[in-house]
Length: 216
Image (cartoon, rainbow, N blue to C red; front, side, top):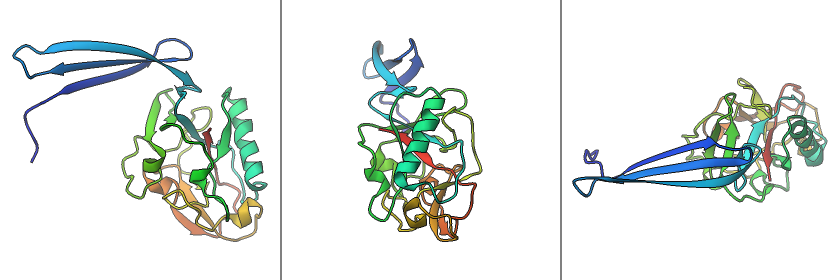
């Protein structure tokens, strides 16, 4: 049953105050007394590539590919090139699994995952253990924005990965083959685990698939 008595009120607002900084204002009030006291605490959090420096920025590639990405090294090079062309400064790698590597292990996770939408707003998609979870059905926004923040909805994403971040085993021969063999894909329109695992089929000879890139 919903509790109709409000115990606490917390208002969190975030805005970019200066280049390289996120301004975070927390306003709280306590109704435990007849006259509630309101306090404001403001802190400045360093940001990088538009997201907190302790977090990770993710984007869907603006480029499309067949299953022959040149292996993980080739995919990473693509992510790095797109990021640099967009003026991003962090190190980006492809969020892909192979027969010996799980995608979730490709990044030294240090915080939450963020995507920046076409309006320049950063959306928190959650911590990696929640992001890679079959129970994750409430991401703030689909992963459909590319490195320039343009929307790229309606596309499939090569992942080779299950919804829990582990390898599916279907990865275009470790991303070196464009033959008609199986690959696991996600979709850019999803706001749950199907962004990573939407199905497996002989997609490797397609040339219209995207990849996900995430900062270290």
